[in-house]
Length: 372
Image (tube, rainbow, N blue to C red; front, side, top):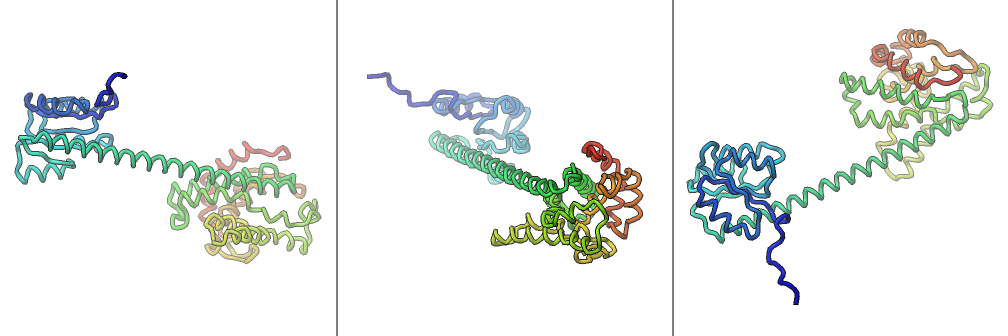
C-alpha cells in the first residue's frame, strides 16, 4: 500500500488570502483557521497591505476597519481604484457592526461584511464561497478574452483574404494594360492619405469614420475592374479614341458595378462590404459640376468614396506616362487639380490635396514606373 495522499493541495496551487488586522490575536486565529487550505499572508495596517498586494496579488482580502496608519475604508478604496486589483474580493471583518459602517463598506466595493467576534465556520464558508465566485469570474473573463482574441484573429484573416482578393482581381484587370504599372498600389495609398487627413481634421465626419475609411481604402484598387469587359482594340489603342470608342470605354464603370452587384446578389442579402466597391467602380468618373459619367451626378450626389478615388486617379494619370501623353510634373498636377476645384473635383478634397500634396509626391516617387 502506497503512502496516504495528503488532503490538501500543494502550497503553490492554493489560493492566497491576505488578512489585514492590527490585532495580533485576530491575525493568529484567522491564520490558523485558514492555513490548512489556503496560503495566508498578514498585514497589521493598510499601508503594509498595499505593499504586499503590489508584490503578489492575493485571491481574497480579509480587512479590518479600525487600524493605525491606514484604516480599512481607505485601504479598500485604494484597492478598488487600481484597475489591476479591483477584482480582488474584499471581506470586511470588524467590530463596527452598525448599519452605517456596513453600508459604507459595500459602497466602497466590498463583497461581504462580517461582524466580530467571528464564527469560524461562517468565516471559512464565506471565504470559500467568495473564492469560488472569483474563480468562476476569472474563468469566464479568460474565456471571454480568448473568444475576443479568436474573433479578432478570424476577422483579421477575413479582412486579409478580402484585401488580397481585391488586389488579385485588380491586378488581373491591370495586366490587360501593361502601361499602368504600380497604378493600383499608388491609388490605394493616395486614397489612404486623403482618408487619414479627413479623419484627423473631422471633415465629412457624417460620412466617414475609421471603419468606413478602411473599407474605402481596401476597395479603391477595384476602380477600373470593369475594363476587363472593354475590347483590346479600344482599351489598348495607342491613338486618340473616336467618340464612339470613348462611349465604349465609359461603360467600364457600369460593367464593373454590375459584376460586383451580381457577386453581392449571390450572397442573398446586401452586404455593406460591397457598397464602397460599387460606388467607387461606378462613379469615380463623375464630376463635381455634373459633366461626368455614367449618370452625370453632381456635387454631393456623387458618393464621397468615388470623389476621393477620382482625385487620386486623376493625379496618378497626370503624373504617369501613356502612349498618348508624357508624364506631367507634380507641379503641373497640383495646378490642374487646383484649377478644377469646383468643376471636376470636390472643393474640400481639392484643398485637402493641396495640404498633403507632398505625401502624394512621395508615394509617386516610391512607386515610380520605369516608363515615367
